[in-house]
Length: 243
Image (cartoon, rainbow, N blue to C red; front, top):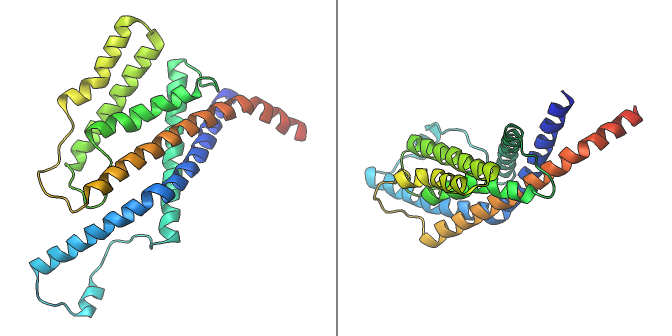
């Protein structure tokens, strides 16, 4: 029970730290790109509405239309984004800890960067090869098909990386590499052939910054988990002395 508590709280604290770091990078590098893309999306939406119904609509009719709830721009939206990012990071840190436990390979300060790099490759880099990060207004394939392919890619990448890390023989490297490539051999679902209003340079910058933020988050998460996990016995002893 003590070991489970140690693993659980180390993962939660590591996810919290990584989530805050990721939220900060998102506000700095990613949110401005999203806001810029939303400008194009809103312009396109207004143009389509005007083309479909060129007759002017009375202001009170706009007010009567019900719209789904969304956080207000500014602090409220940023706070909800940071909260969601932190919760997702905690969940990913728990997955990282579970993989370490079930694979029998400990996460230490000496190998934490490799664990973080593996998490980034499995959950961000390999899926992004087939499904690049998308801005609002970009044309995308069916959501259900994308989710299925994303999970297939993540699981195949995790399986291939674990096989190569555990066995470390020539055949395992070859088989692990093949498993990594399988989702890309059959291919990701492709979006319909339709023009996008989002400029190419904006989409490229968003993809690059999203991957950079994910890499930074995974490295911080793995390092923080190793530090908290190894510090936990000392923290327990200090708590007992304090009592």
